[in-house]
Image 1 (cartoon, rainbow, N blue to C red):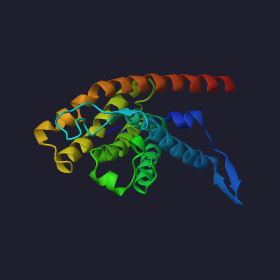
Image 2 (cartoon, rainbow, N blue to C red; image 1 turned 180 degrees about the vertical axis):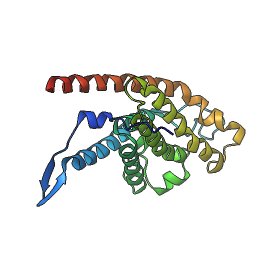
Image 3 (cartoon, helix red, strand yellow; image 1 turned 90 degrees about the vertical axis):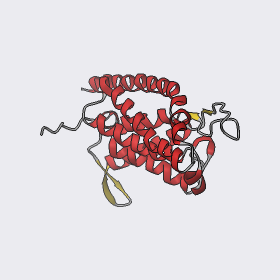
Length: 217
C-alpha cells in the first residue's frame, strides 16, 4: 500500500528553523521554541474565539435557549489543526482543555473548571475540539492543504460533532431523537460561514508565506 509523503504545514513553511539556540547553558533546537510558542499562541487564539458567542432561542430548554452556544471556537480549532499539523494542533487543544479544567477561564464565555467540563452541554464538544484538530492536521500533512484545505476542514468539522452529540444524549440526557436537532442542525449555517472564513484565511496565508519565501531566494 502506497503511503503518502508528509506535506509541510503552514507553520513550518512560515517559521522554518534548523538552528540551535543556547538557553541556560544548554543547546536546544530553535524549532522546539517555535513549536512551544505556536502551541501556546493557538491555544490563546481558540480562547479568544470563545469570547464571541450567542445562544439560540429554544423553548424545549428550561432557560428558553439552547445551552450550547454558537461561538467562533470551531473556526479557531480548525485553523489550529490546519496551520500546525496533527501533533502541534492536538497539543494546542490539549493545553487549552487542561488549563481550562484546571480553572483558567479559557472556555467559551470565560467558563472553566472540572464541573463545567464534566456537566455542561459543551463538554463533549470540547473533546471534539481535540479530535478535530488532530484529524484536520493529519489530513493537511497528507497533502490536503493549500487548495485542498477546505476538505480537511470539512472532515475535521464533522469529527468534532461525534463526541458532542454523544455527550448530549448520554450526559445531558437529551432524548436521542432530539439530539440532531438540538446539537447539530441549528449550528450548520454558522459552521458553513466559519468554514468559508477558514477557507479564505488559509490560502491567503499560504500565498503570503510563498511570496515571502520566493523573495528570500
